[in-house]
Amino acid sequence: MALPRLELPTIQHWDCHVSGSCCKEYLVTVSEEERQRILAQGWDPEKDLDGRDPFVRRGPPWARRYHLNHRPDGSCVFLSDQGRCRIHERFGYETKPLPCRLFPFVLVPQGDHWGVSVRFACPSAAANKGRALPDHAAELREFAEQLVKREGLTPQADGTLAPPPPLQAGQRVPWPDLMRFVRALLRLIGNRKNRLERRMRNCLELANLCRQARFDAIQGERLDELLEILATSAEAQTPREPASLPEPTWIGRVLFRQAAAIYTRKDHGPSSGLARQGRAALINAAWRFAQGTGPVPRMHNWMPHTTFEQVEAAQCELTPAAEEILERYYLLKIGSTQFCGAASFGMSFWEGLEHLALTLPILLWVARAFSPLPPDEAIIKALSIVDDHFGFNPVLASLRQRLSFKILARRGETSRLIAWYSRSPVPRV
Ligand code: SF4
Image (cartoon, rainbow, N blue to C red; front, side, top):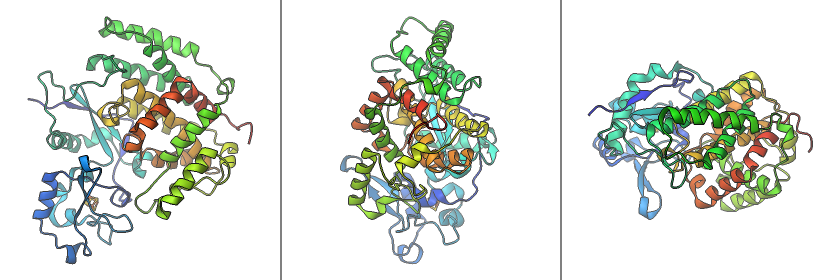
């Protein structure tokens, strides 16, 4: 049976510029087949790996998995002093674990094709450097085939690899119709008549309207027509000026800062922040984020020394270049459906979209922390920090966090936060 085809966005570029961050910053999970392959390569722990085992087993007792081992500085045991992969050097590129070759690409089954996203945690991806994604088609096709085997996915008779995520609890539509919702969101995000912040607020308004509607009897082109009407209505109902929205309430601010703490945290590798100082430092940081006054705890080594008050007062008016970067990011995350389903801890379509929308005020908040960097540079740094977590940090999928995202979205706080951190200059300290 033919495997699903690839859908490759032309807006995104990438090539490896050997920043080495992926081999120093991440825990690489290996399948049993990959583990056996590396064991068969005959690495001598004493001679080759500084006396370390090639693998460690991590995770809760019910889901322990093997990972490549790391040195105390966070780098993979197979990374040479010259910054090269020794598995690659000795045995060839194809013998590296699939996640090493796949990074920073993210492949998402979307009915009879794959959606492709990239992780902006890779500095080259955030900066859009390298060849356009369609130029990577051959390698991505190969990765897709290997991913099917590695994850034990079975192509169904209709050509799909996985069922579509629900729109919300108890509401499902088939893949072709789900992609109509995706296209409706893409039209809103790509609508340059609005500033990006309003485009995202439009998406949240559309989510709000769709959550109240039933789609069981409406399919195909009729669904397109209905979504067009709902999108027009969302546009009409979304306040034009961010300053006309009420400020976020204290509940919204507290939950927002807790999410910002998670999204700016780095526990592993050379960019790790406060986690190096132990548990007590992290508990203290959580308390300071809840209070929201004084110095911002440096959860990530890149975060500048600043205070919550300075971040609130900072100016970071988005230039057209910065808006384009964010537009690319959201077009990619939505177009690939990386924001929901299996790629995002099983979140429903609208839950995932509301979670994705919250990353915008977090990105704007982090970018303000980098002030006075030019806005596009600040946004690229913020994206590298924040997107490290999106779809990959299981803490974001905990019941507590999901409840917090739900409260923010349902109370309209996410829209208020987007508007608040888009005001320039922020009118109060
Ligand atoms: S195996 Fe090679 S490519 Fe993978 S993390 Fe280690 S050094 Fe990097």
